[in-house]
Image (cartoon, rainbow, N blue to C red; front, side, top):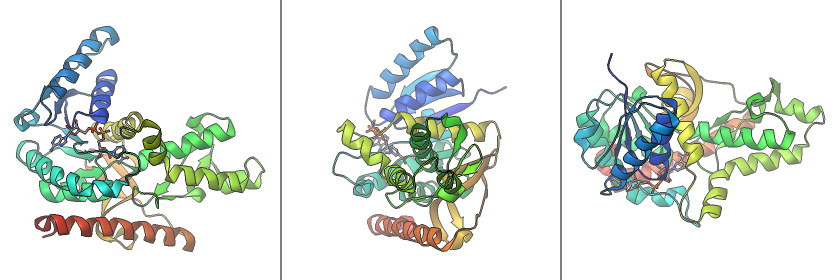
Length: 321
Ligand code: A3D
């Protein structure tokens, strides 16, 4: 039986964390590709040596050659630059669109049947660019953001209520920006919708509003603390939840940036929505009912994504064709 091969395109903070987690979870063998010479090789060797202590069998290779990702079952893309304090995700577009063009060409040539998860920011525009540049089927290219955003929401809620994070389920829609849409009505504590948690007197409405706001700005809070880059532990865990569902055909329903072809009234954009992730990649988009306020927030978020994609097509017109 062939061993699963996972290619990490970008071996920086998230790429290195992904490689270590993949080893610990024995999800597959790992190739770390990066343009920086020595970095992917050094990380691969370091993590491989942790296998003896942790007791995992995983072949790891660091490389500067795309040929080494040949035949990968999964590619996780973090190549590019992250935010520094004072920068928005959108400030990264000029550099990262060029990176997506290179990465797309590499994946097209060497791993055209892979399931691809994009993490590079600004996420909803970069996953669009990567799909265009690689020409891979749209259902096989998705973006990671919603799993991370919901994990932040769940963490804040569980801490506030003093309960296990396992009993908090959260729902986030829209683009991965500060105007993302945390859906309070569809988020629950042990099955109890958050509006009922407020009605029961367990949490004040103002406190819930503060948590929603903190979730929206969750990435920026970490950038301000770290000062030299952005979050990487939770983003890596979040991407692997999606990869795990693909590799094991679990059919988890996960919030992912998926290509919309009319769903939610949106056509031709990648936007965060609930998706069934299985062996067929993004197998089905779940359309939930939105009330007027939720729909307005969603439309605003989609407008932001559209603005970013328009900016991409100005820098790289060949992608828009
Ligand atoms: P970092 O540690 O800088 O790693 C990026 C790596 O990409 C570096 O090792 C670079 O050498 C490498 N790289 C640059 N250009 C290329 C290229 N052309 N080909 C191959 N490799 C290249 O960043 P990071 O790992 O902290 O973050 C990676 C990306 O993820 C950034 O764009 C972040 O903004 C983004 N990010 C997204 C989320 C989401 O939730 C969507 C969360 C956190 C970070």
